[in-house]
Amino acid sequence: MISILPENPAVHAPAIEALYDRTFGPGHFAKTAERLREGSASLPDCSRVAVEAGRVVGACRIWPVEIGDPATPAVFVGPLAVDEAHRGKSLGHDLVQATLKACHAQGWQLALIIGAPAYFEPLGFSRVPAGRIKLPGPQDPDRILIQSFGATAPDVHGQVRVPASRRHVV
Image 1 (cartoon, one colour):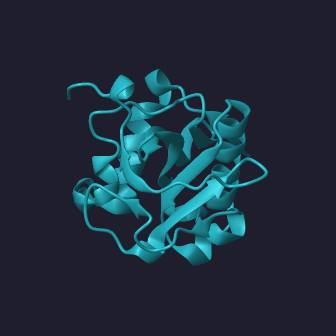
Image 2 (image 1 turned 120 degrees about the vertical axis):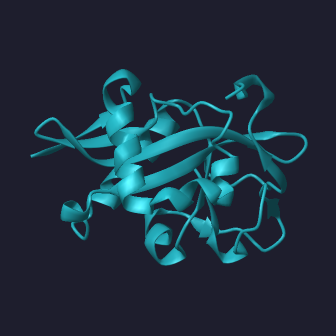
């Protein structure tokens, strides 16, 4: 049986990092998305892990970001990873839905992800019109997706960055 739980960094962090390494390989640190994670801290209360028999078999982390000026707070979703033995069984979708529900419960109104539209649009994400959001590195504009938890999506545009209050030296 698989349980989806809030991340407990003291317990889950090493297993999550090992899962990310197995899933994405060493090159994942070079991706644009990593520029929004490095020097920041994730939100464990919103992040979720899938655990089976005490073993982490899936993870979806959440990071605080802000978009534009004036800054619109948002959460940055990912990375999402599922152990190879559990892929194709909706666990990834379940993890994303659980993280988004937790984000909404914590008062967040907007979620941003870099990902495959075919995978994330059924979960409520929509493509950002090209040029509206700028990331700290090159990115295929068709993979920049956003979801609003409110009745109407805010009109966000501009640079995505780590909030100054969340930056730390690594």
